[in-house]
Length: 71
Figure 1 (cartoon, rainbow, N blue to C red):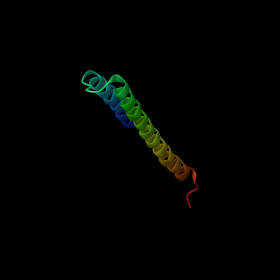
Figure 2: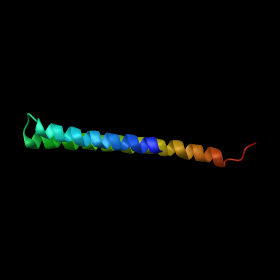
Figure 3: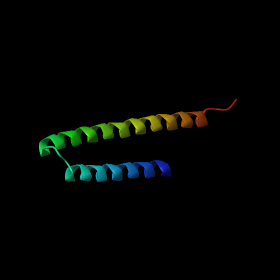
Figure 4: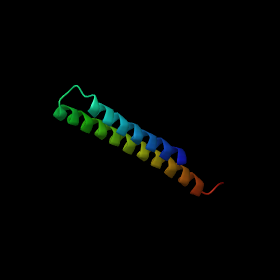
């Protein structure tokens, strides 16, 4: 669990640094850049939600296996 939060915090920090650098060195207009950033944040959020759902399903399976009576 600790490694997951470490990974998640690293990804968030990387996303923030990347977004900041993109704003500083952007060759496009502000409106176009904002649209691209919104799309990337949306994709990133969906990836995080998918990963969390997969991990939850995995943990629920492990819990069910632990709760089931052993023969």
